[in-house]
Every structure is written in C-alpha cells, then in structure tokens.
Length: 279
Image (cartoon, rainbow, N blue to C red; front, side, top):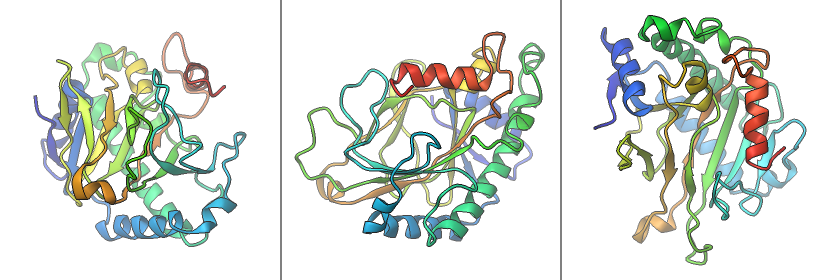
C-alpha cells in the first residue's frame, strides 16, 4: 500500500483524501493554497533561532506549555526509555514567540489551520453515515476558535556519533490531536507504519504538505480513521552531519468538545499526559 499524493485542487481530492487517511492514516497534499515562500521563510527564521543563544531566554513553561525545550530536556515516546534527538519550540497563537519569528509564524499557523478546516470537512463528508453520526458536531467546528492547537517548531541537530544507544530523531509514536499538518521537512527520514506492520518512507517534496490522523480523530470516529505510528530515522553518511527541521501543526479541539461517550478533548488529553508521565 502506498501513501496517496493528492492534488488539493482536484475535484476528486475530498474522496481521495478521506480514503488515504482511512487506508493508512497519512496522506500527502500537493498544489495546496499555502505559499512556499512563507514556509521557506519560517524555516529560515527558526533555523537562525535554534542556532542562537536567544533560545535560552524562552525556557519552557510547564503551566502554559509554551517555549523552548532543549535536546537534554527532550521528550521520550511512549514505551521508550531514551529521549528523542531533537530540540523544539512550542508556540500557541498569542503566546510567547521570538520577535524575529512571530509574524511569519502567526501567518503560517493561521494558513495551516484554515486548510485543516477544509480537510476535516472532507473527512466528515466522505465517512459512512454511521460514522458521521458519532461526531458531536461537524469536525471543522471542533477546532473553531480553539486555543489548544499547537505549532511545534523542531530542530534535529547534526549527529555526533555519541548519541545514546537506540536513540532516534523521533521514536515511533502516534499524535494525540485531531489532525496534524506538516509542511515538508528540510530532509527525509519520516516513516509511517502500514496495517501490515511495514515501515514506509513518507514521500518528500518542498511543495507538499503531509497530513495524518491523530488519536482524537480515531476516538471520535469510533476508530474508523486510525491514528498511525510514525517515526523519524537517523540519517547516515554525509546526511548525518546536517540539521533537519520540521514544523507540525497539531490541531486540537476546544477543551469542552465531546469526542465520544468516554471523553471530552480535555479528559482525553489529560489521560494521554498521564500515560506519558507528564501529568
């Protein structure tokens, strides 16, 4: 099974996108409405930020969940004992942001969130009627005016050869959110696990946006759309000496949104945080 590459402007795009997420939890969008120049500018500005000492002025705040997380403080994927090899910044709209990055970051955040609303509408309209009946409201309304959507700016530094045994740039995990939009990273390495347990390379092109289903979409669709494991492998050879940057936007509903008979967004999120040892 291959990951579908879908032309956003095509008349068949809504059905193809829904089928792609149903099949493997991932799809790639081409010919999308977001400016490549805006994406390139965001990568350039955040690369400069991670290369500077300014990052140490934005220490992560565990209460607001925003700010800079160093490689030493990086997260562990569920079930892993070794930290990922990355540093990253958590940005929520209206929260702290380096002055050099704020304008570009806000513009890209809002453009991706707007595109996500369209994609969620496609998923709802192309789901079976019994699945549609499970949604407490239209999927696109779940993220409307949400202040929980997270923009994560990630820098995977060049490898030194002294990394801990079994450490990966990002160990296998699923996303906790409703939907993730990821402008193509600056280097390859992202893989997704298919239904047969095979790891597939996610195709990369500077003009594409990768989209995947998260745990909350799986929950509210009664597991019709499944949240799929993915990882970022360590590069080898000359590529090991290069940085990799990525910018996933994690679309989260408002706290009170009902996902299922068991959970609101807030109760589901808190459960996941406890499982990760973060709450």
